[in-house]
Image 1 (cartoon, rainbow over the protein chains, first blue to last red):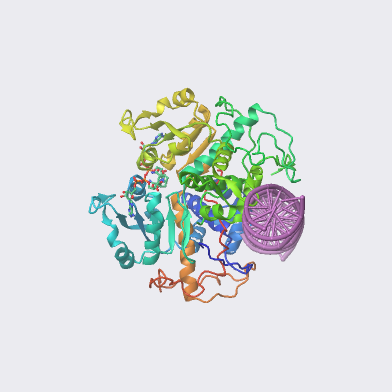
Image 2: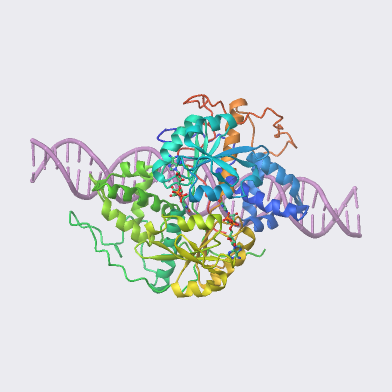
Length: 282
Length: 282
DNA sequence: ATGTCTTTGTGAACGCGTGCACAAAGATGG
DNA sequence: CCATCTTTGTGCACGCGTTCACAAAGACAT
Ligand SMILES: NC(=O)c1ccc[n+]([C@@H]2O[C@H](COP(=O)([O-])OP(=O)(O)OC[C@H]3O[C@@H](n4cnc5c(N)ncnc54)[C@H](O)[C@@H]3O)[C@@H](O)[C@H]2O)c1
Ligand SMILES: NC(=O)c1ccc[n+]([C@@H]2O[C@H](COP(=O)([O-])OP(=O)(O)OC[C@H]3O[C@@H](n4cnc5c(N)ncnc54)[C@H](O)[C@@H]3O)[C@@H](O)[C@H]2O)c1
């Protein structure tokens, strides 16, 4: 994506909606659990509950894959597991390389959840010479110099970046140049990649900040009664926001907002309905 | 059933769109970087590029916060940093507890990104008696028995779950009972929580599966020309399943740079921004 | 075979989020 | 003080995703 302007209203993609793709792994997980318990079939209602989604949504999602259910009965668990696995491309083996074997990288390497879904850690790569040869999770760490060779030899197309933010773009460039077309980025940086390369990022800090936002709101609503404020007339209600008048000194006093009010939780906050991406293409 | 017509209590509407909230941390990160470089002001265009988003989107996002820009000039970096921080609730300190100090939990504990944004690791909790007292990232791990006391004593409202999936729900219940109202869950499970409690989850496995899906599609399109196919019929029984008989063409030709075969990703890939949630309320 | 009951698959409505395009605001220069 | 230029703030349209609601499909009993 980068700055590429692929402007194209062309919505003719016969593909599966992205939102649906993102839920398939969720269904797969629930189905796998059922499969292990030897449950033969499930209704959309049951499966939806297990996956934590709406049953109508689940049915619509499955409808994009085809008509795999039996009316009056439900879905055949084993069959569905296979179909979803196939759709996600999990029937084949995906070698993965992890770059940056520090705290996080090592944890990822030790994570058993990789192999359980067809992902195989093909190599662990780090720039630190001292790490070279050192075994992590049973695999010897290799030096960055070998990066291109490793990727080429193993036909790796998915890479995980767990290096410090400063090195992420550089590592990314090398991965892409070496043939990687899918990247999972843990470094808090916006990666710029050429078209055709997918980037998903996971940022712990962002997740916490989003939680903090809602947390603050809960606490605020609890104490302060909802304020009347029109939202949409274009008339910004300057309620609690002292806008920098004209060209005056912008910097507001830092200690303004009240203290850390108690957090006596209890707010009967309405269930969070909408959700927001925490992972997005960079 | 009998869901009744629960008239949605009319959207509160005074809030900021979730999608916007999720991007605020992104802007904040970019702004912080600018601030450190002592850049006084930025235009929406510049900042948008730095944050990896569309400038129109950025301006609209900011418009929900208020009119903090100056036409013809741009935004005052320091002022905006403050405003966003305040909006996200980062002007106060958020104590956080991490439960499950294994591979991942330890990595999280060692992560410096916590403190840099007002989050403070108040305690590390683990059920393993052997872990108790053991220092991780400079903090002594405490036993699960102390969970309620720790949360209460420190006024913690945000909890991170990094235990095995099997223990997640149980831990979650205890956290909630103890007063936690925001949870970041790393265990691959759907957590069920009472209203008023926010849950966000990060699932590495799901991310990889989504990448695999696109990866598979890329490989497939390269070999097979876009096929005409209606996506809503359901007529064919097993027609749309051309078994990937061998021909395991894993990744597209590595080649050198710019190897993006012709128009590999074009018809189906969304614009530069289409995204999908990887974190969702459970 | 026929009727009943369960559950799927989906048409349609709705709401949210995104991106365009432009008027207005304000800086800057003469 | 006025003209011009830059950039914000936002009205508007559009497409995606979600949800409702129901006809149709099939299982199962009689
Ligand atoms: N630890 C966490 O829980 C956590 C959470 C969220 C995000 N992150 C992010 O993940 C990244 C890694 O975090 P960490 O705690 O593991 O850091 P770390 O410092 O422990 O590990 C970084 C590793 O990357 C290696 N490295 C540095 N430059 C490299 C390069 N050019 N090529 C290859 N390897 C290189 C280093 O040798 C080191 O081993 C950081 O960007 C961090 O912000 C970490
Ligand atoms: N390691 C990763 O990279 C990674 C990635 C994605 C998801 N995950 C998930 O994160 C979780 C932790 O992964 P890990 O690799 O750190 O596992 P781990 O086995 O290394 O650590 C789990 C820790 O949780 C503790 N624990 C178990 N039950 C507990 C309880 N009831 N209360 C408190 N603590 C308890 C254990 O003592 C152990 O220290 C798992 O659910 C895993 O699926 C891990």
